[in-house]
Image 1 (cartoon, one colour):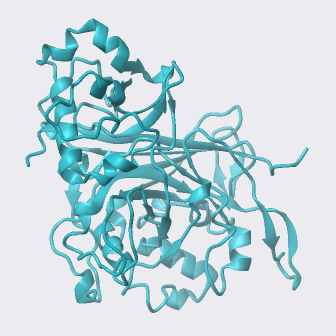
Image 2 (cartoon, rainbow, N blue to C red):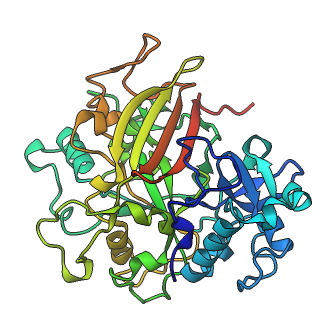
Image 3 (cartoon, helix red, strand yellow):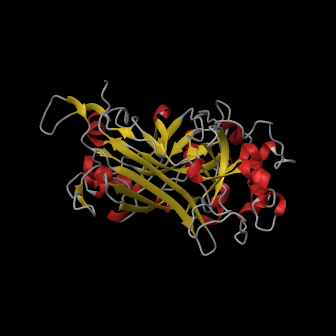
Length: 427
């Protein structure tokens, strides 16, 4: 089935600002609270939120096999479960309805009042009910940098890293949408030179510039997903800030890996950009040497050219760009991650979230965490208000953005933004 929604020559009768992340070719999916306190599934064109529940009630999806309440729910899980054919039919229909040449909805003022809102009239929600969350560790540059800092610089990568997409299971209860502040975590750390740990607020709170993909129901328990089929089960992507407490992490990660240093907060952008919308930006990933085992081998273009940025905005200050990297640097592709994840028969469900791991590039400016940007705090970054940062301070806001762009179209994710507050204190 062709992806007519991606036609680069299509324009919308809704106004789309220049360099918007959300032209009519994007059509992402999210969940928002309307000005009438109604939670609905929607999409976005320019600075307008579109109520897909109202669109469905008014029969604009006639001919597409949808349950009666498909878009009148508070999560996208059921829609995602319907699979790629339905996703594509719905995106194509939305593109037709909002095409500048189509008068059907454009000239129906009464219907438009129920369907279209300004973005400042809605409140974005977490778009999916996340049953399980997996975080990978798939940037070779990031893994090498961390290995140099914490282990033997001559053997920065552990022996398994070039053979499997390393990952761990995170905590879905701590995943929040953009705009929700978080608190500095409390935990155990081992002060330098000491042999006994102390309990208190983490002093080394960090961001991790990541993406994540959302799956549909992919398999039954015991079944593996072939690498060449894995993308069929990926609905779309978000930008993700996987907050980390580096001092807690250093003390606890041996022998079982990330735990409390990683599960106190994970922030994601609220709009899910479909893999279909990203098709024009496919590119080849890094050369893999040694050649992966047969179940992970793939040919063709399985990376995407997604420009990523991270900013620190001090309280009463302006944003400072501290990292610029690209999704295409990831050593292990999403398809390889999903194929490996299910290679032992692990079940993957609709709404599962799979993080990329920190995405770092080959230069210091492209390192995707403060741990790397300041090399463990040894090289503080100067901000435009005259202060310095080794890690994230209380009342700093971390903002992440991502977009793809070619000569014809720009497809973006918007942003994920969250402020770090002091530790939570019981009153």
